[in-house]
Image (cartoon, rainbow, N blue to C red; front, side, top):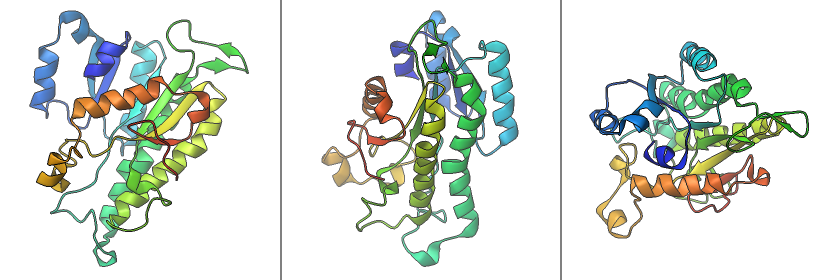
Length: 249
């Protein structure tokens, strides 16, 4: 959100699972200058609840000029060392956990994209663009993972259901890119690298931090937005890392 405020001029609709559950977010918002604070609206959204997704779409239709320029699907779940996943062996695979991973990491982002697609429409026909300000095209950004790459999976961590769910997301991004391109919307899957978030903390080590393998949030976000800003139509449907390097599926 911080970098979107500095890099863009439009309004930002920030969705969180439980509004008010993050003191850091509330503190940041309360510290913003009035003009910037007025650009941000926080809403609750569970991406596994299609009713909530549809309600948010209706709000955007009514209060945001029926227009979305950029959709960032960043919700995701990996697990901790006390949950059923990420699994280190086949015998650890749990049906409920697998379904939860799929719901949050793959089905949810694709449902959000599907429901918001009409709001993202940026082109009518082959050459008539509908945007009179900002970029001509709209964009859908999905956070994925390097471990989702089947070509890159040559050994190491098992993490079965996380790999499976993110690989499913990648398949959805590639498949939807063909349809979305016809309406002037590009879509991309991005791998942020090991970033210093609550999601990655259980899997960080002192050695990883000492070697610079754990990125500060500001660094990862900045590099990912750099990739988005340099994106061209040929990149739509692809999987790229934080440095803009293509990752094979």
